[in-house]
Length: 330
Image (spheres, helix red, strand yellow):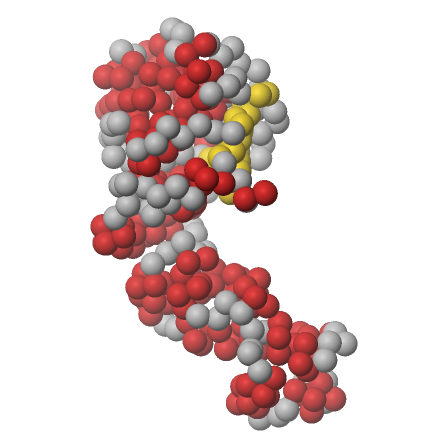
């Protein structure tokens, strides 16, 4: 079954924010006006985008994207934005926004750090769909205003790009510092200085209290992978750099140490068990299918000394790495 996204709350808000009656939006889409009475109504991604387009068409006024961005940045409580606001820095906040965005809409957000700048790319959760350009404009205006509110600084994106042509008025261009470019992808880039800017709204203790609930909601909505699977996948990438502590893994996965350990306990395992499993599986692969030396394999598994790898491997198999390789792993 396709993932469903909540729209009931938007029907409740669009009249107050835009003066747009929900029943008119639904009629425009050929849907029953009575759906606006369902506070917990959820729809597939394609319908979510169609509702947005119908809402903008019904509003029928210039600057509606800016009006919505300002209203939401200073208004309704939304889990992804709360996660953003509780973070230590802008970059961590945007990563948390990316993690929890599926709770409120069919968008994927990916972050990267080219040349120390922070690039934020957004695309529909389903590749076959196209994001409405007006929604894309709303997103970059909304995120920019949130960044300014949470940092108490006049953050200006280095560059913004919209996934399609859209008339941009002077107010939006001045707000963003420059007119958005047209590209095949919605994106925005922040300077290295702004990316690491501390947020005045940060609250680690408050976030720790609510994080588990947000994670549970995310798993219910999109069937997120188990914490065990996420850790093992991340360990395969992190071990060569020596990231073998639970603290380092929690930081990579953007969760608190306490939340990580709690979720692993619920799944009947521990971080040390997963670390051992991952190291053995990787060593088995290297010994059977590569010409790497034992010392090289030890390094790739994150062991500080080769002797530590020898002891661990003998504990897993009762054999030395050399004997295991010679026997073909039998």
